[in-house]
Image 1 (cartoon, one colour):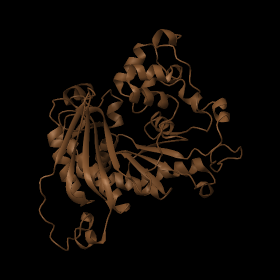
Image 2 (spheres, rainbow, N blue to C red):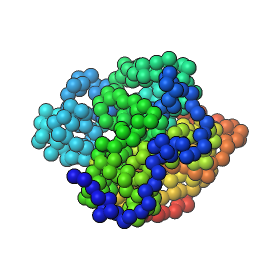
Image 3 (spheres, rainbow, N blue to C red):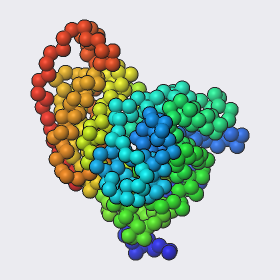
Image 4 (cartoon, rainbow, N blue to C red):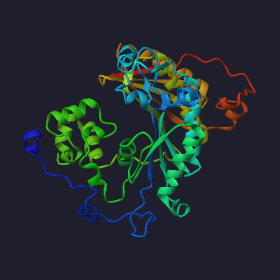
Length: 416
């Protein structure tokens, strides 16, 4: 069906497509990346790597008897389902009763949360052996920046496929890979052909790649927003690109409307990797369809806190403030912060504070779709902290007794 944008959104002057020839020629060219092919096209250096059915895949790797069988992970509701189960129609957030009704041969496991972080770290180490800049975006996905490595890979595609194979061979986990110039396009490409998918988007072909895809394909756009677009006759990203930014901001708000406009053009407005001296550190993960499993969510919070602690130690930084944000499936979100009694990058201290925040925030009988942990007010680790063993929980050594923690002051906010 042809869409008449004027009948859907207010008439606003059409913005220039940033990937179009006119847009490229209208701007002063910035620093060019090294070419990766004879034609001299820009290097599609941003690679998104996502582990397929992460929790279920880890359970299959831990127990070879489960390989090739439909596996459901969780308690009460499905937190993760293997692709064998998904082929039967099982979806995350289903109750086990419904899941077993449509897939009676499925094997249910409660989840060995203590092992998930180890597998994620193993995947990360493999990725770091291929490129120096690796960012953990969520529990099961990573962004890798291959900029500056062009001379190392005479055949770039073969190098990425070798990386994919090495992850499978060393960890037992299959990953899907997407390569493009931006994070948005790379993350869409990696998710299109799962499991064990592989897609490279040649520079200059982003518009043709995105145009026919459903709007729900845009990662990070909530189902409710995609549904609102479809209700207005905007079914594909190509149709969405015709909608002026001002119209989207008027309908969805300045922040979300701007994000939708950017994502439809393959942009996200963020650098691919964290700067070497960050002012804050944020780690989050999204649970498809959401879950109310508090043990499962607690395991995610422990993992995210551990990732933040590791990042702080790598940057030789400590945090004075920690925050936790949760978003429910009905899009109500809440966040809370706590000021630490002293600057820290100790995994145990960060975990304890984050779980305290979660205990206070999780007060609704609604499934949680996103959990995020962040630290702010960072400062350099000083030699006194080293002498006192602060921030080095991974060694297990504590030369001096750390004083008991005092109650942290807290600030709370919630929004719809």
